[in-house]
Length: 175
Image (cartoon, rainbow, N blue to C red):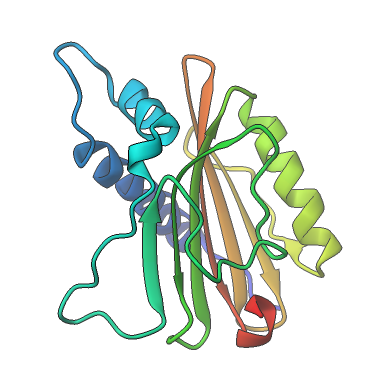
């Protein structure tokens, strides 16, 4: 069994934080609005459910959207936590393994978010890798087989937990 080193866990947490920062940077905020309120407003806005136009280098089978699940998103693999608001989702089935990402927010503690996804992933045969955080950021890694991985990171800001889930899974897992 492969075990993630601290460097890979730290890189995953940094990537998750980068995703959150990129999303908040793309969200217009009024004067004095915080990044957390921008994300929350963006997730609740019905206008934010637009699919991004593919870039010239985008491959067919790659999609991302804000405020909704992209078409074909593997909801059995990564269901949306009940009560959570979607911030963004992406799915790239052109890579091996396929990559899936989900960003959401919920007014629940980080521990509840991790417990929900831990239970669901373990039921699908994923094993939790030792470790519950990277620095002070709650973060959990999962492994199934030799090359299927999932990372969940949760940032808690003023009672709002924003979670980022990134998965690299076999094509059979996303059907």
